[in-house]
Length: 265
Ligand code: NAD
Image 1: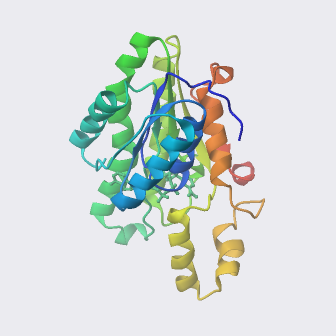
Image 2 (image 1 turned 180 degrees about the horizontal axis):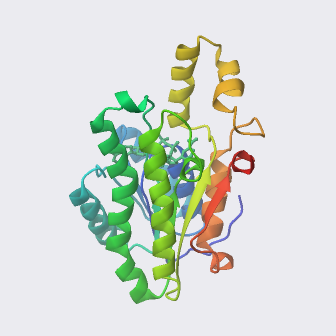
């Protein structure tokens, strides 16, 4: 992807960027010139090597923090750490997320709480704590990684669907509030993207349905995705990057599907 350096001088915080979509977005932003705070859980040695490789490739400042975003205090600590180690946050990508699949009557309340606090509350706290600085600088980009499940539902994903719908609502409200400030706030709504989060679901569904992996992918996982192929991480990263550019300054409050036609049904 040739993207130039149009984000030179900007600092980005991408939550959940030690893996999957967030990692792809962090790489795309750094390749476009942004200094990036990578965030998320995982094996420290592997993450450190990944960050060092990105810094060497791009010449950008790349940090890493493993804040547990289910705790509001940790969200605040992460924002302060980003400011002190990389710079004040100009681009905030709220991407960290988890899934839990269960009938609603058996849904563990602690899983509900964890999903809501990680995907909704942490997005609110991170926005709350970064908007004042963006306003002072007269520029900002907030990108919330929602999902098709922020627009439509599937069964057995009550917490995820509720949190993602709420994240889309938060996106719209914040966009309206900030409309005249040079800050945009949008949600990206992917269908299935092949990441570790989805790999786990393929394995689970293969067990539940007693089907081979390839049939699970086509008939179960991608049943609602008309293109019958996974969205690639790079496609989502390109959309996030576009939303950070000046060409996207009039796009705000949008919930943009990248779902192979899923939500056209
Ligand atoms: P992933 O599992 O590959 O990565 C999730 C990231 O979140 C990791 O960096 C992980 O360390 C971090 N994380 C998990 N729990 C955390 C916690 N308590 N505190 C801090 N960080 C935590 O997932 P992914 O598939 O790349 O998903 C990224 C986002 O995109 C999520 O919000 C997900 O809901 C959304 N999404 C994914 C898909 C898909 O098909 N993969 C589709 C639509 C939306």
